[in-house]
Structures are given as structure tokens and as C-alpha cells.
Amino acid sequence: MTIIYLLLYGIPLDRTSKDTHRLNEYGRRLLGFCKDNDIYICNGRVGVDRYHGDLTCKDSSVIDYMITSPQLLCTVHKFEVEPFDALFSDRHCLINIFMKCKANVQDVNIVVNKPKAIETPIWNNFKCENFINEIMSDNVQEVVRNLVEDDSCDVKYSY
Image 1 (tube, rainbow, N blue to C red):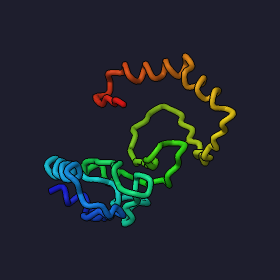
Image 2: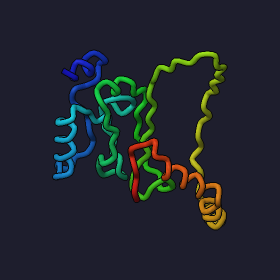
Image 3: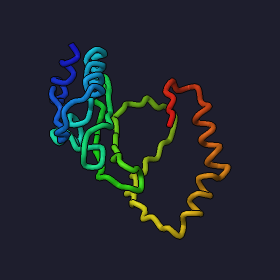
Image 4: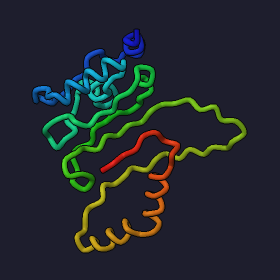
């Protein structure tokens, strides 16, 4: 029944992928989970990545996904796999996702500024110590503690 959402919004039933590797056990489990729970992988199906299915792991495979319900799939305004950048990860590409939503706002003045283009920083080895000091600063550590202790979110990440 949820295929109707895909057809209604012109979202391809089959997704595209540049990953040429054979599906392993984890991939089979992921696809089975998606089918059993009636959810869909966005990669290769929506946004700029539609009909492309760009690789998400340093020119080798697709192992980073956005998975959503069919009802939310149509709200994905932009889905784009960025080129690999060693500044952000040792192997993984950034995935940019923008979703459309409706907000019911009353009696509030909202100013929307056009986002500025983000320039990719260039690593400077002479500033390595400054970077480490900033990451270890009390302000950053407090933000991390607040994020970890916030129980309003059911999702917990571990590294």
C-alpha cells in the first residue's frame, strides 16, 4: 500500500547505485529489515542522488544511508553525497539532506537569511595544537555532555 506514496510523488520504485560489489550478509539484512518494516533507502532514489546512487565510502561502496518511511520520503528536498574529503572522515563521504516541512507558527516574526556557502577549510599543521585545545575546551565538552545526557531523543550513538 505504501508504494502509492512513491508513485504519487514520482519517486522511483527501484533505486540506483554505483556500488558494484556483491551484496553481503549485512546488506541482505538491511534490505530485509527495510522490506519487513515498510521503509525505504533514499540513496539513489531522491534529490541530486536520484538515478545516480553515488558511492558513500571513498570511491568503493555505499555503506552510509538515509532510510525513511514512504510518508517522509516525499519530504526529502535535497539528498546529495558530497565528494570524499579527508578533513571530515577517514573513509566516508558527507551526505547533505534537506527536508521540507510545514510549520504552524503564530504571532512570531521570523527572519530567514539565505545560508552562506560553506567553504571547505584547509588543514594547517601549524594550528593542530589550537584545534585540539578548542575541541577539548570546557564549552565544547559541556555541549557534548548536554547532548549525551538529553533523554528527549531515543537514539543513542556510540563510537
